[in-house]
Length: 358
Ligand SMILES: [Fe+2]
Image 1: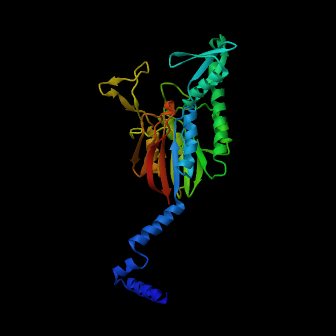
Image 2: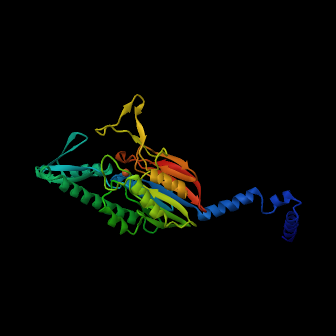
Image 3: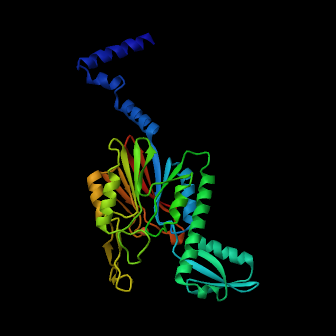
């Protein structure tokens, strides 16, 4: 033992005098040891984050998202906006033991309550909402009344999701960092804010831990469908500049935004004609950028560590804008497929990333 100490001391003296580079490699500075120490530090501070977005009411996608926390051994989950589905599928009660509905332009007959439940489950899996009406009841509803019913069902499903998440993530330190999206009614916000399992980062900056902060924002640029949260680029620029003024510049930043940056390749959507049909060319749909210039400008100015985006389901891609790693995992909610993005961060640096599907 003593002999070893003497030998090491001799090597250290040699290094101090700059005479022996081989000695430097032998005593605690070898690439192997350096690598080992670096790995140890990385393991100590490593955070693995999982991000998915645009579930549009899909029960299957949400359940897979929560399961991903343990499956990928994540430190935190990032839930992108557009949690709400778009369609209410009415079920008509024809008589005490017969129900009828229409989906994918086909009439569906149900003869037991069990069949009705099975149909409702299938609709929920792909993001639709169902409600049972008497024969003429649904036809007599105004569009405002139908929207009110849809919003109630959206909130009810979200409440169920939050209960499910709280149950599955209990006894873990895993938290969900969520934002809304342009398709999410404002009624969802209080529900999301009151959850113990979720940090609602929309319109605010929240701490992630490990010297990291999250800036969240759920608005998109105007769409042809005039949805709940839309802003022009100048409006979004003002809002984002105000918000980014509260960033702590000593911390690493994650942008958690619904609208992707304009012209980044994460924002390519089919170009639509006046009747909102995709314009086709010989090689398929004509694509055009629909992202936000304000978001692109803010990334250029702030250069956050990572940018997480959604909104454009067709634009599943990862790119770098300056020093910022930007990802849009896309969405295949109507098929119940969970498209995601995993990234590993240590010491305010991105160590690795990967697009996932499951
Ligand atoms: Fe969206």
